[in-house]
Length: 248
Ligand SMILES: C[S@@+](CC[C@H](N)C(=O)[O-])C[C@H]1O[C@@H](n2cnc3c(N)ncnc32)[C@H](O)[C@@H]1O
Image (cartoon, rainbow, N blue to C red; front, side, top):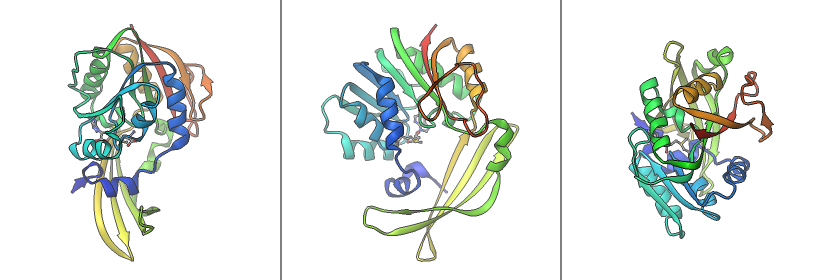
């Protein structure tokens, strides 16, 4: 079965873009003149950041790189390259490296997570910052991720056609890996099926990994963009955290 990152039209149906979140990321980017965005997907965030900075978006999926390049690639100061966040080495520092919007959740093992954090450090200079994000539930609510097939929403494509989305979710508490299967239906018939596998990286686990990888948290924000105590542990309804870090 194909991943949701192999087909631009299905990806757009399953991942609506969050304007408010992108505005918040632009605010955090501040006066960074060069930005590296890991797992840049369809490139919408990178394009918005490129209004004020030179931006390189990196994504492992050739289809997503093609989609982003087609949609935004002609903007000055913006480019998209194919690469794996675990092994990427562009041999240059950036003012800001971003691993947000579920980027790190695609590192499904500790080994993959630490490799990605090493890559991020490799693209930071003495004054650089990095932004990391958790966007998932805290451990006490993880069982809600495990569900049999159910309707999870509907979506309208660019031509106004409505699709119904059904999902099945299988969560392994030992590895914290959540495997989802989406069915896309049109007029009552299934037209596509896609998978999405992510590790549930809660804020405590991310903080621990950041400390072990040599990052220090300068500021932390909740999902509404309010600054919060970096060490505070969010409750189940406040699980999204963005961390602004320095290397070392
Ligand atoms: C949630 S999407 C990114 C969302 C993006 N901000 C957007 O606006 O479309 C996650 C992306 O991570 C990419 N990805 C998954 N594993 C990756 C890896 N190891 N290295 C780089 N990109 C990866 C996928 O191809 C996908 O495009």
